[in-house]
Length: 189
Image (cartoon, rainbow, N blue to C red; front, side):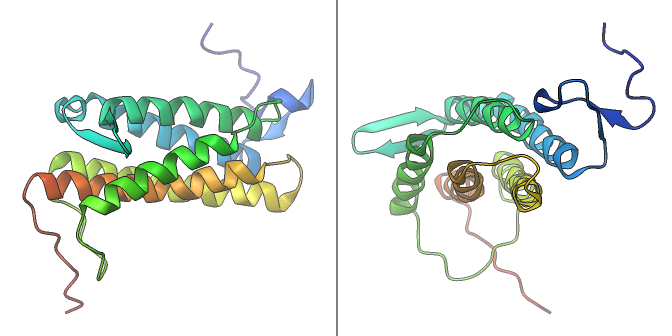
């Protein structure tokens, strides 16, 4: 059944709360919602016809399809959601390191960053950049949960979310670069 009516009073239940319900406006509910938003929008990125064609370097002699990278990120976001909800699930340091290796490999192919850039270029790059902003919001919400101290959040989880937005930014830049699109800095006029 898709509905129970139990949340009609503005409360919800999470893994760690047994029979206790929390407000849907609580820090935990806000973080879970923000994580769900980024995960859902990454689904839009993943089904873009070009996402299967884009090759993401994963380090020396290793490469992945963008769709595959996005799918792995989505799976990891479910682990983070479970952790924030109170389940005994945690992101491992190796997953953070995996993002760092990809970011470093992508950056090695791109011109250095000298300013901010106006989002756009290709549709795929724009959706990756929008995903980056959703990831940053989710990170802020999860940090809020960690600061509140009600639900413990691991340092690897916070690091993973911080690296995720960097990966999405690097991917957006890579897609535009490989499409021959020059990054447009803001004019501030």
